[in-house]
Length: 295
Image 1 (tube, helix red, strand yellow):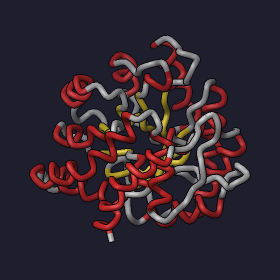
Image 2 (image 1 turned 45 degrees about the horizontal axis):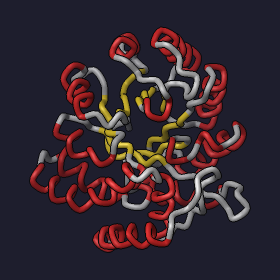
Image 3 (image 1 turned 30 degrees about the vertical axis):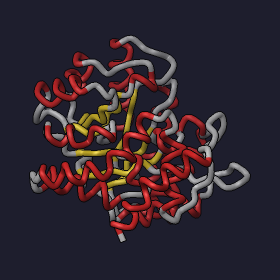
């Protein structure tokens, strides 16, 4: 059990009144547990920033109860302060989750020295396997080479989800940090490129509703080194993944994808809205053939 393979960052299902549907969250987690390598709770796809502290803790417990022991569980514990990140980490550890996903604190925009201090404190206090999450477009702060090199001196910093979308950054990580960390694809429409450059992990939001398509691509490229098949599979997935990554409505599309797959998870919390009828129709035309192929 590790960060390798396809990991699904779970959506957070909401009821019509806006409250979390914990029954559905548990069922969704249990349903995916045997179809992907791991599940993430509290990531961007789960709208962690829109949940209260108590709600986030409750989602840890719900998923751990539903899927604990069946798959590798990672807790997203990002927050704006070091204190809150550590508090969330303790709750995740108490719930029995396997590992942590940690990004730079959003909005605060710490310096690189401050970011390093922050991440070391998290490790000092929690002592759990950690996947770093480099997503400066969301957090406002990158995880630099200098910080990464220092962190990799410690055994708990194992992997990094790279979400800049910059291919040159992918090349740099794949060559300068080869065999030093598990490189994870965090830009879904670049998954094939990540695998070509040796990535062994994919945290993909669309695997909430297309788990088999994700694992088929991963297995072809990473397990078998069959990039001819990988290109064919990626060509089928790419229109869906491009729309998710480039539309500005990633979470809304993932939610609608779950609905198309038979698991309605409600609408995102405001200020995010819903898809237009035209957007829904276009997305359905792209997703339905992939859902049929999985049956």
